[in-house]
Length: 334
Figure 1 (tube, rainbow, N blue to C red):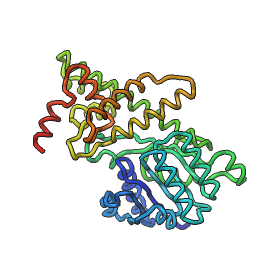
Figure 2: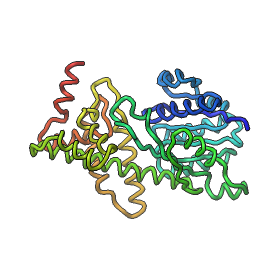
Figure 3: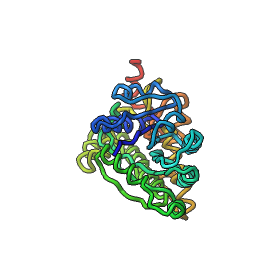
Figure 4: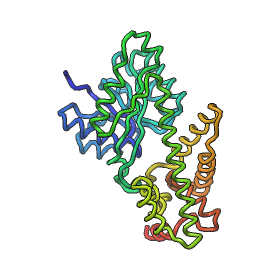
């Protein structure tokens, strides 16, 4: 059986590492090289060096690919991308697998658009970092637990055959990332909900770790000994989150780039809070974390801030400077 032509749209902080892993996998099985595009195409240079093929537009990716992946910044961009894929020509039989974190309602709406045009939509990717996310290798070694969803049940019944999109996308994803596949059934919104639940955990971890580090500094315990305990007691993932604070990655140098921007984290938190409200529950830690991220974004307007920037807000409220001494020493050297 001929290998599918795979395309990729979106090379942000998550997308670039995922696309590179995919290209490496395609090379390893002698499959056609990944065709990719991005708003700033030069961001794909590392991918091009691995053999990826850049094109200028989403339309070109869609026309040349039978299986299309995307990882974009927000709901509006995802909707626009889906519409451009549909407008590219006949997409009957093509699979569109999106890896973005968006509201479940957006996933459902995009699924309906793609299905109505004859394609199949697959939603879901939950990133699980296995390296320190404050380094420039953040997502280059990220493993992914795939959360594949196919078309809506109504679409599957209309076509009277099981959707093959999730199976095909999952096969490529599992081989590429070496983790596992959690089947989420045929309701597209379920994968988005599970990703949002994962983000609730992540933003809560960052809020609690930020509070703990400020506590350690104010009481004289010290962040170094706290971080040692975090690593020993809770393992490498929480230790890597802690290092986003202690290395100054929460507030990159002016002109630098955040590992995962605070604006994207605020978008994810708002999606979580909206879903919780509609379900009749509250996410009180997420509410606090969002408020602290908003204050950080306002304070640091004009410079890059990481999703862990709530640490700066909590520091200020405790009478400390938003920027640690390490940040200030680093910035002074620029």
